[in-house]
Image (tube, rainbow, N blue to C red):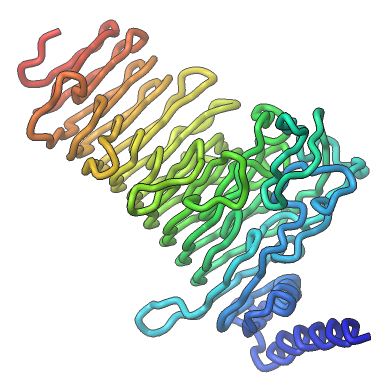
Length: 488
C-alpha cells in the first residue's frame, strides 16, 4: 500500500508541475501553446513531466535542474534478446514523435545556460515512440532493427552493454519499430550533464534543429560485433554528443533540414557504459534525405581525455557525415580539438551523395586525420575543402595526416593552412582524379622526407597542385605539380 501511495503522489506532482503553468503562459508569437516545466532532480517526476509537455507540441520552456536517470530500456542494446527486459521501453528518455515542438532552456544576461538536464539514455529521441515488437506490424515493410550476431566467450557469456555477463547465443535477433517522419523538433540552450548514449538523437522527422547547447561528459554505448553495415542497421540518424552510429530505420527517414549550430561538446566517449568497442562522435548525421548544416560548434576531447588517456573505442571523430542525400552538407566555422581519430569523417558507404563544403574550420590535435573524406563505392564529386586551419602540436604523438582524400573526383582544396608536426603527408590522395589543390600553405619549419606536403598514390591522375610552399611525392599519372623547386 505504501508503494502505491508513493507512486500516486509522484504522478500527481508531475501533473501539477506542468498543468499549473500552462494557463499562465498562454501562447507564443507563433500562436502555439507554451508550457513551462520546472525540474525537480527526480527522474520519476522529471521525465514524465517533460514527456507530457512535449506531447502537447508548441514551445516547452525548461527551468531549473532535471535528472532523467539511467534506465536504458530497449534502445541501448540492439537488438537485444527475445522476451528480455531490453524489450521494455526505457524510462530515462523523452520521445518526441506526436507534435512539432521547440524545447528551450533558460539563459542569464551573460549567456550562461541555467537549465540543466542530467543523465538520460539518451535524454531526447526524435522520431520514435520507444516501442518495439518481435512481430512485424502491418504496413511496416522494411522498417526494422536489422539483424546482429553477438559473439560469446568460452564460458558462453556475453557482456551486454549495461547489464554485465549474461547467457550468450548464436544467431540473429530481429525487432520492429515505427518511424514518425512528420515531426519537427528544436532543442536549444540546454546544458546536458553526463548524458548516456547520446545527448540528442533523431531517427526520423522533418526539420531537426539543435542549437546553443552544451553536452558534457557523454558516455557512449559501443557497437556490437558483427553489425550488418549494409543491411537494415545502417539507417537515418542525426546525433549530438554521442556514441554509436546506427539507428532503428532502414531508409533515410529525416527529410527536411538538420541544423547543428553553436553547440559545445566536451568529453564524449572517454568513459564507456559497456564492454564492447564502439564509436563516439561530437556531432553526426548519416543516411538522411536532409540538408545538413554544422556551423559554429566547439568540440573537444572526443574519445580521448585532455591528458591523452582514452577508452576502448575503435573510431572517434569530432564531426561525422555519412550518406546524406538531401543537398550539399555545409561544415563551417567549427573547432575540433583533441580527437582520438578524426576531426571530420566524411564517408560515402552505400550510394553517391553530394560532397560537403568544409570551410573555415579549425582542427587541433586530431590523431589520424583532421579531415578524412572518402567513398567506398566509387569516385565522388563535389567535395570542397577551403580555408581550414590544421594544427598538430605533438602532445599525444604526431598526427598521421591532415587531409586524406580517397576516391575523389574534381575536389577543390584551397587555402588550407597546416602547422605543427606530422608522421605522414599533410595531404594524402588515393585514387583521386582531376582535383585542384591551390595555394595551400605548409607552415612547418622543416619538411621530413617521410611526410611531404602532398602524396599522390599510383591510382591518382589528372590532378593539379599549385602553391608557394611545400613538397610532393607523385606516384600517379598526368598530375601537374607547380611548387617551388619541385622535380618529379
